[in-house]
Image (cartoon, rainbow, N blue to C red; front, top):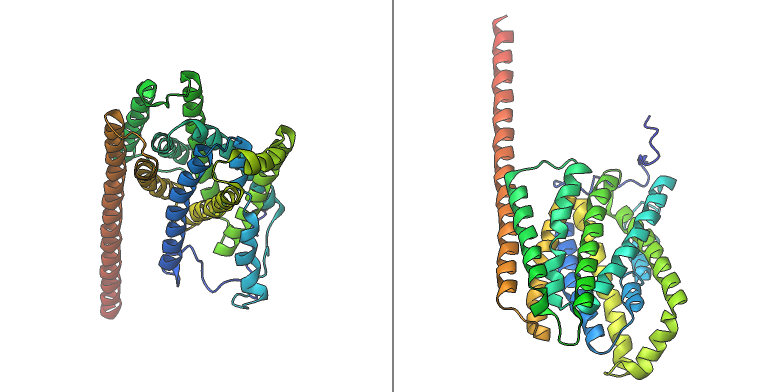
Amino acid sequence: MNNNPTHIVHHEEDEPEEDQKAETSKGYFMLLLVNYLFLFVGSVSASLLSKFYFNHKGSSRWVSTWVQCGGFPFLLFPIFLPYYVFKCTKRKPFSHFSRKIFSLSVFIGLLLGVNNLLFSWGNSYLPVSTSSLLLSSQLVFNLIFSVVIAKQRLTFSNLNAVTLLTLSSVLLALYSGHDKASNLSKSNYFIGFFCTVGAGLLFALYLPVMEIIYKKVYCYSMVVEMQLIMEVAATALATVGMSFSGGFAEMRRESERVFDLGKKMYWVTVFANVVTWQLCFMGTAGMVFLTSSLTGAICMTAILAMNVIGGVVVYGDNFGGVKVVSTVLCSWGFCSYVYGMYVKIKLEKEEKEKKEKMEINNSNVMEMVQIVV
C-alpha cells in the first residue's frame, strides 16, 4: 500500500476504462489536438487582446491580471455536466482529490497569480512582438528546471536551443533603446523587459512541477479540477490586489470615461480576454498532462512566433533589423530541438524493435531446446 497522500487510489466504479495519458488509449490524439488548438487560439488571441486593452487607454495592470484567471467558472461546465447531466462518465467530480493535491493546487495557483501580474506589467509597456520574443526565454528556464526537477536528459539539441534563445533575448535587450515607444521612458521599458522575463521564469517553473504532480493523476477530468482550484487561488490574489489598489472602481471609471471605444466595447474586451485566457491555460495544462513539460514549452515557443506576426500585422509593431535576427535565432533553436526529438524517438523505436526481435529469437531457441530435451 502506497502511503503517499498524493497517490490516487483507483476504484472500479468510477475509474475510466484506461489511462488517458497512454498514447494507445481511445481518443488520446483527439484530446491532444483539442488541447493544442485551445493553446494556439488562446495564446495568440489573449496576447493581442491584452495589448488591445492597453492600446485603447486601459491602464489597470490589476484588471489585466484579473481577467487572466477570472474565467474559472467556465471550468465548472466540463467538470459537472458530463457526470450529472450527460451521464457519460462514471467518475464523480473531485473523487480521490487528496488534501496534498488540493494544497499544491492552491499554492501553484498563487504563483500563477504573481506570474499573471508580471505578464500584465510587462505587456503594458512592451510591443506585442517584443513581449512574445522575450517570453520565448521560458523555454530556456523550462529546460533548466526540467533537468533539475523532472530529471529531463540534457542533449546537444537542448543546449543548442538554450544558447540560441538566450542570444535572441540578449539581442532584444541591447536593442531596447531603438524599440521602445516614443512616449515610454527607458526605465519603464526595462521594467517591462525584466517583468516579462520574470513571467517566463515563473511559468517555466510551473510546467515541470505540474508534470511531476500529473504523474499522480490518471484522468483528464482531474486536470480540469486542479486547474479550477489553481485559478480560484490566482483570482483571489488578483481580487485582493484590486481591492487594495481600487481596481474595481477603476474598472468602472475606465469603462465609462477612459476607454476610447466606449463602455460596451470595454466590457466586450474584458469578456473576450477572460475567455481566451481560459483557453490558453487549459490548453497548457492539457499539453503537459498528455505529453511533458518540455514538449508543452516547445509548443508554446512555436506559438510565440505567431504572436510576433500577429503584433506586426494587427498593431504595426516594428519588425526590422535586430528583431528579425532574434526571430530567426528563436526559430532555429526550436527547429534544433524538434530535430533532436525526432532523432531520439527514431533511436528509441529502433532499440525497441531490436529488443523485441531478440526476445522472439530467445523464445524460439528456448522452445527448440525444450523440444530436443
